[in-house]
Amino acid sequence: MLAEGPGGPVWLGVDLGTQGVRAVAVDAAGHVAGAGSARLRHDLRRGPRHEQDPQEWWTATCVATSAALAGLRGREVAALAVDSTSGTLVVQDGAGRAVGPGLMYDDTRAAARVAAVREAGQAVWAALGYRVQAAWALPKLVELCATGAVPAGHTVVHQADHVVARLAGHPVATDTSHALKTGYDLLADAWPTAVFEALGVDAAVLPAVVPPGTPLAVVSPAAAAESAVPAGTPVVAGMTDGCAAQVAAGALAPGDWCSALGTTLVVKGATATPVVDPAGAVYCHRHPDGGWLPGGASNVGAGVLRRELPGVDLAALTPAAAALGVPPGATYPLVGVGERFPFPDPDARGFDVGGPAVPTPAETLARVAHGVAYVERLAFDVLAGLGADVSGAVTVTGATSANDWWNQLRADVLGRPVAVPREAGSAFGAAVLAAAEPGSLAATAQRMVRLRARFDPRPERADALAEGCARLRAELTRERRWSL
Image (cartoon, rainbow, N blue to C red):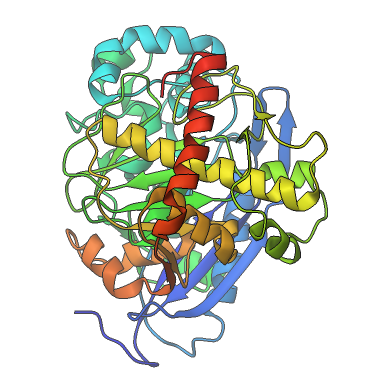
């Protein structure tokens, strides 16, 4: 049982994001006792390449953890966990020092390797429901090995692995969550060595793999001096940022789901058995407690509003949007070109049909909000069609979860209760992971994740919203030949 109280221990979660590092210290009751952050200022993008400096990952981590622990007056740091962007890699030497840049999650320099990767592992990927993409870590791994960027005695590790190595003072194992996009076979619980051999990759360049939450190391005295994390603090294996955000939402019991809506929409849940999607739009992580964590990411989202209504105060605009009711026509609010979920199509484009020729700002907000909510409903329909249990609760996070009109709309469209957590974010989820004993992540999250609000669906709106969702479904199917 976790000890509670103002003088009790805290657990530290560290989130390595694209733009910065955030750290939070969380007590047994889910209260944030301290927080800190630091920006990452050296972000290099050149065509398909996206790189960062691994040394800055470390220095920013030290700034963030020092700030998070500054006011705790010597309270015990019981353990820490680190999450990071999925698919980000770095080459490091035998002492855990980086010997090259970090290749970021959206770096597609290895796009030409994708066809060979798909062919070499066709049977493995089909069994897992993977559709390897250019930005995944595996094509980048093949590229690094083929171009001589991995000298003898060096390894290729994920972003979180490298920062934990700096904390420990030596290389550490990775976790099944970060290893997924590097091609780890979650069914066999092993690196697919035969596939790697066909691709010219020696599996020895990769770290061992353990479940998230597994003790990895303790903080070294040298790292303690830089990070303010006490020497000897246990460090446990982390998860990707998306999975850590799911932990922060507490959506870890079979049938429960979380839906993060910010620039784009990400839906993740928990199931007893893997959800295998032949189209590759849905893929599954291993649940640290047992079972699976399926999910998919759409390219629709509130990012459209930043483009269409730059600088507008959306909170102030919300009452006018709410008064409009269900918009006519259909809006498919893609942030850019291409879609991933609920259907994969690299050439998909957004549209807005059947509405006013020149919508007012309030009409734009209403049409985008309804369009996103309809796509969210279609995503759950696709998951159910693949055999996923979608009967449980839905917890919503992301920037839009502060807008209670939009939260209520999502509950009305989904026809099920929607909950909003008081604390959210990947760093909080990493702290919950650090606090959990093996096999007890869901139970620990249930104790630590506290809700801010709950929105029940309003039956009187069901028919009108179902018609709006049907219009979008029909438009997607009729004009773009996507079967939903």
